[in-house]
Image 1 (cartoon, one colour):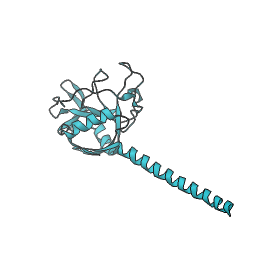
Image 2 (cartoon, helix red, strand yellow):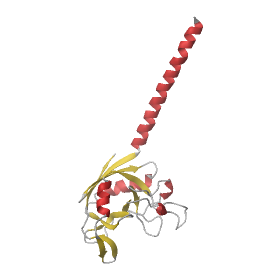
Image 3 (cartoon, rainbow, N blue to C red):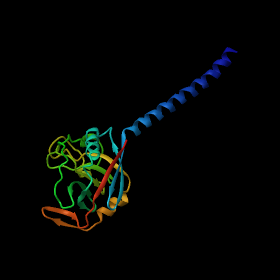
Image 4 (tube, rainbow, N blue to C red):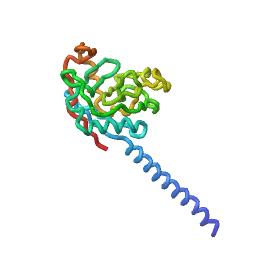
Length: 202
């Protein structure tokens, strides 16, 4: 009789353990979801939905959220567009004047393991690896040469901090517009493409 009860107890224990594993996995998944910030970039040609990776790029994501929440991006444009490469915006107004975000440069997080693949969003910067402030770009194709290869001026790469979840058709549409020069700037869309708002939802 004792042996029979023991045999019944074993599968019950296994079942309970499995239930605990499922609960723990659900909690882990929820935790990962909580580390992604949802963003909507409303442009004059359509919306782009993004998911920002708070876990892999905490400094970059916090910087972007702070700037977006201030309303800074409203009225800026996609000022540099190269089909088959990327679309860049978040720093100039429609009259091609620089708009200061009022924030300082941030640490380059390109060593976070996130590659510059099609549909990812990354920070634009100068030749100084740690000079990014407000400007960003969305990769129009896989751009492995932008990835981090080493902590040198040539190897730092460009920090990816999220990806497009909806609206790649809008990105494609922007990438395909006719471009030209405007003053000192090249690859400027002939049709002004405005960022109307950037909305953050945790």
